[in-house]
Image (tube, rainbow, N blue to C red; front, side, top):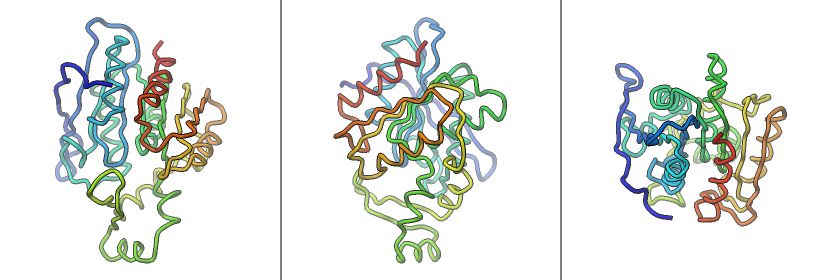
Length: 266
């Protein structure tokens, strides 16, 4: 895998008003000729940005296929403004919908990684609520972590972490992917309860392809299996990668991701 040639320039949109306003950075690549294919929209994970391996490879693949591609950073991530500690699922969802409306007004394939899968599922719920659900041509969900604050964090909080949440409004834990610790705020956890998707049937109205590593130390593959149970009426395919981890960024993992995306570029 190589760096994306002629790196796409960063552009910005403003989301929110007054004290809640923040500047969101995005990279939008358009095909040389209109192809009629959906735009690929990358939705990154918690503390990830649009320069990650999978995000760059999605854009590379879009270029190869003659499709448009949108990458962006949530507030508090990468090149976007705003404080990371202010981030919640609702806040990042608002930004995602603003980017989709601004940079990808036609049909889209939403490609989520980890927390980005949760954002993708909430985004399609919101698009369907406002009558735009048919715009989503497909979902590719990589190591999906919907409801991770409710399902994976809250039940496993230590007494020290609960105390830190109550007294300081956040707690920290070491990160395997960064020298800086992960920070989880009380606002993120409380907002996560209001954005649950694993509490009923999830209707997407489009094909869904899930890619999940069976050696994922962060999101167990049983979580992805549970997600499938909430997608009973949809065209859902799951690819379990026996030796795959949470990142799924190896060349063979990227190849599977591109294959999944390709089935939705019609």
